Length: 123
Length: 327
Image (cartoon, rainbow over all chains, first blue to last red; front, side, top):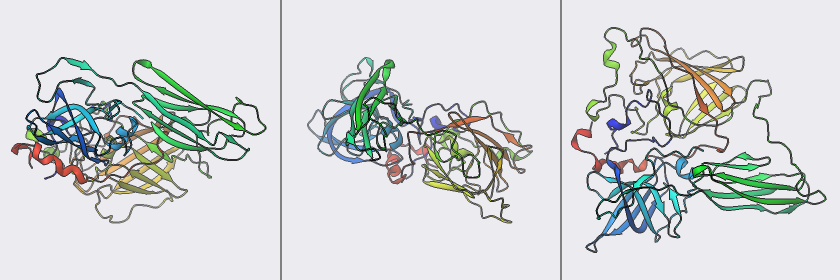
């Protein structure tokens, strides 16, 4: 199924759209008002438009491993923050902070990443 | 490049399974990761490559000669005299970081001023403006509602109930947005200009416009396409682009249209980009030409080209949507 436009993303042509971050699609499926942080091990890093993704293996409180789908901004924005295709790599332990999926799925729209060496970078 | 993030940086630093924590504003600091010149000593006329990497910058410049640049990159230069290049990074709370490297040119004094940056008023051999370069998008402010023809209310896009009549409202299907809607999507575009034609390359969704500048008229019966058929001409230093031949799958700021859509755009170079004026006509929808307020498509001198854009990971979203969100 393809992404469908949500109400939050309306009227692009007439709204006073000021930030490039209003990118591509709605954030309505994410709880952006109550962000959380997840820490895990990078399994895969998709450095692609329209949005980059990190697939993060997170161990929950019961010891079960859950793969989180971490959505980030488009490549032009990430590059403006200093990202490259090599900023994270499989095996890195990182923390991602952002809005989790309202559906309860292990997914997040991340706005900040703490890298393996402790640097923080916008995402 | 602008670094404002719509999702914001106001975050809660709570564990995923833990109780809610108090909000904390997290603004990561700007950093200079590296700045080098290779080699640092040359003979006059030899090249040097400046290589830099920064993180979380609000703005990055290299002086002299280079100017505004992207967060990371490299640039080949040919200093004629020994020159100290300084990387300047602005960050949150008006912070400023600098790092310098000196390139020594044999037989010249260190610290000498190098040549000035290239002029911004680039021209073609015939004297017309050369608009070649990368530009950003600009949202529409203060647009008046169009006056619809009787019975044309059906063309107004209904976004209630998460349903979108126009397929390309925000590019969620990764198809071209049409004109002028393409200039509100938050991805850059690039102009490549030649003497008798101009090409626009749009990062989203890797589509293009070919705009002849040789005085030709429109085709007698152009094929309906997403981006239409354009012809261009110069009105003084203003590029005027006339476009017809659209299909009916795009919208114009909240309104669908017929194949009779006719768009006239005017591009005029200003200090910070291209002043963009556009008038939209569709005799089946609008009572009279719909004139959009002027806006500036910002120049992006820090970018050399647009990026690849492949919508393969859009399929990941479906499971996050409820039943009401399906078309």
